[in-house]
Image (cartoon, rainbow, N blue to C red; front, top):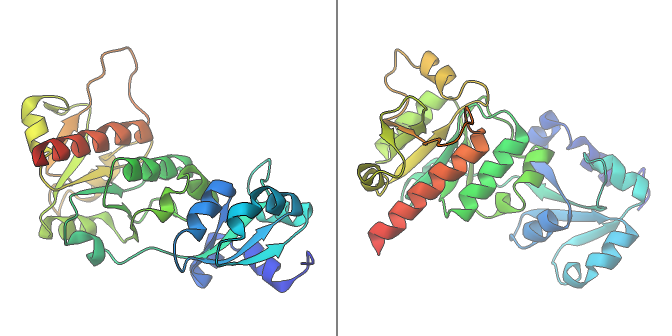
Length: 270
């Protein structure tokens, strides 16, 4: 495929969010992301790769029901947002779902990103939610685009494993969660309830949605905006810090909270 091929040029435009939203397509870069993408039926439109990448990964790509498009190293660099391109990129359809689809049925644990702006943090939370067995991740207005290239890479393929919701303002999501019977939880250093205590473990056995706010201000920004519409969460819970660190990164806090809920829910079922 020549580097001026219209399909290649169109794929390159997907680096920009506005074009992703218009086309409802995004790029997944690197062998791990591409492998998970092609394993998800109906998602991959085509895979671009350098001769070296196709040679290295040809064993599983040959079995994938997708179109393979050879490109030069220069063209691969043009599709990449990394310093060291890996030479393998899939053009994918959006895979987010309506929020109603994740509220019902047997869903018991949901992660809500409400103002998480860093794509690395967002992708890591998505990966953790997948590992903890969460049922969905909701990105509310003000959070990074889940199809941002760095977010996709940081998710390490988990973007393709569990439902993703691109939602509106947090207050509306809060109301829908409450209506579906989810308790809404948030981490706060000033909370009186603490993770690891018996009464907290009992609380976490119920259907829960954990809300994670901005890197700089936590839940403070959405709490300020929601003063007239009621509480932002049902319960604030403190993550104990026994060392000298002042606080935890939002992705680290999310890992602790989601695993605490997942553990409590599994123990209650056993």
